[in-house]
Length: 88
Image (cartoon, rainbow, N blue to C red; front, side, top):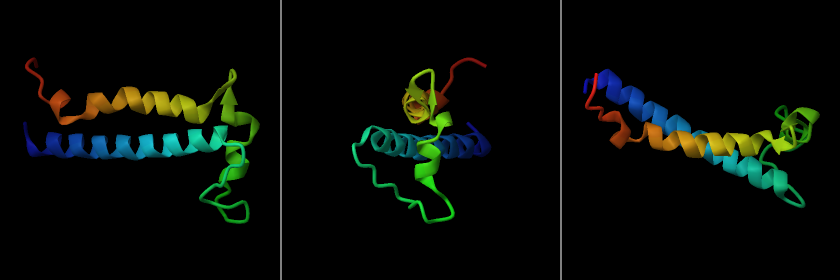
């Protein structure tokens, strides 16, 4: 495996791990009785306004939960074991 492919694989794994962490956080905050967002309503980035908007739920499923499912499914595909392909 060449260096570019290895760097891409590492970057993809790190990006997926960050995405998973954010999706877990937002899913927990969505289902929390009294959410305490990292970015307060008075800041430039208003997490509360975004996560409580009408676009935060699609067909009754929170977008954060959909992201969580995506990253849980995606991470195994980006781990080093998946990089080693025997076919071309």
